[in-house]
Image 1 (tube, rainbow, N blue to C red):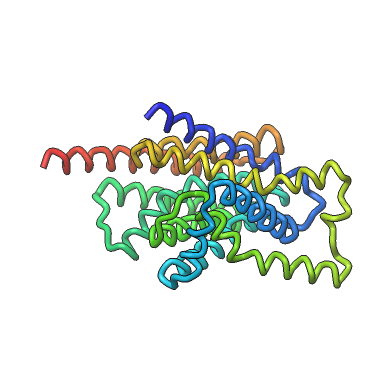
Image 2 (image 1 turned 180 degrees about the vertical axis):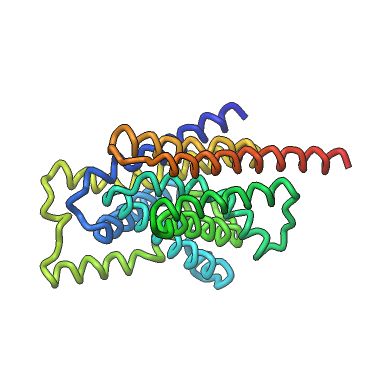
Length: 292
């Protein structure tokens, strides 16, 4: 348990500080950053799988439609999530990315209701209602629908749903997902070269090396997360996950100097209230089920 908690904290701290890393490439378009993230993640995870001598698992996946289709879906969804996140960070929307990852667990409940026919208890429904009110308040304050937050929450929530259809460890799963979108990333490189629009390859050598490290930056928190998930209860892991968006929110205010209006603070307060209500309702429901 203690070892799992340490791994979880490390994973979520890494995810929380990721905006600092993507800010290094402000002059590179988000799509181009994403293509490099995909390629170098594939290269790094390929090396890991070779060292683990697990290429047989990859061949088994490629030969199985039941395994391959969910991985195609999860690969496309996580790539979409990465693209939205990178674009948002480099265009001054870190506050909204934080909101998206706060909303994610509550959106997961809705996905479970719609697709898995799960039945939340009254407290959990109350939490969802409070979160919905918060999104409405934030949308009014923004003067627009908070599409970045909703898109991040939806893409990551659907990614988790797709992952439930196939059980693979982090190494094989991430390599498979990046393999799915690798042809798109390489095709985009060819397009940029043909159109003479390449930016990343003209970066200073030190900055380009930092971009090469995007594979490691992507994979390490996922590997720590996988170790944590194998050793911790889901409820405890759920509490730890809020480290990430909390760090993002603090970075947006103190490092990136994004403005946070009083109304937005009210919206975030409602989100935090919803999370507390949901956690309390979940714990109470689990105790009642155990007692029954």
